[in-house]
Image 1: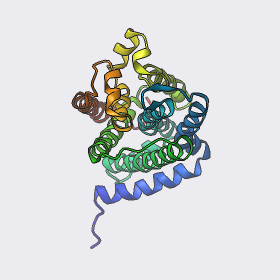
Image 2: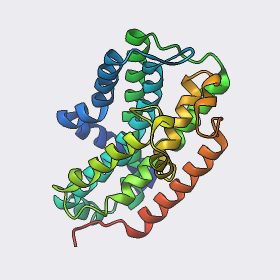
Image 3: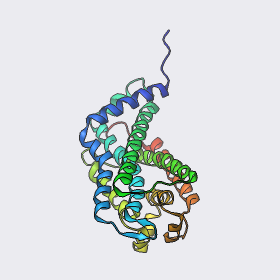
Image 4: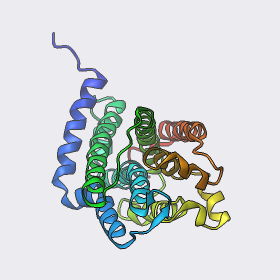
Length: 264
């Protein structure tokens, strides 16, 4: 008697399928993986100022783009592609198969992890080769970087799945999701020094995880002396960890309770 594959085994196979399907969509590959790199090249080439002792704008912007990339590959990508799959009937057909629902989400998570790793490698490579960005030498900073990437990716993935119920159609998903991401990028200190933004923008951004991801990444790639330039005059990594956990719980809750497999 053949053994029935486990949900994890099916999820791993589904992840391989997700990666192959993603690789065939050149527009998605360019937008998801290369767009942050292109922005880094453009902004890093135009703005060459030193914004603080020992800190160039390229170094500041790299930290923001890595954080923003986690949101792009997780939240934005899933909140757009899942409604499209729902419109095409792909989710309804999957739901009608013996494959556990968890395997579908495992497959999506694998795609996000692979995309995120590739994007980070490219961003770090461009930062080192073209803008002379120095990498941290303190192992503690790389430990902080690791939990930020893991927790940030998990949070973005859960929120992307949860938010996929908001767009009324696949065609309109990009028009709903992309402006939200762009606004949060501007408000969260990705394109500008955060403390130079109006206080109401700072307070609004502090509600959402992207602001804390960018601040956490700055604690990794910027010297510790720059912490005095932050709103609280410190990196607040413990607070960053707590807020990301809260948003992860919110994302998982709504993903489990509200996810739709077919159109209304």
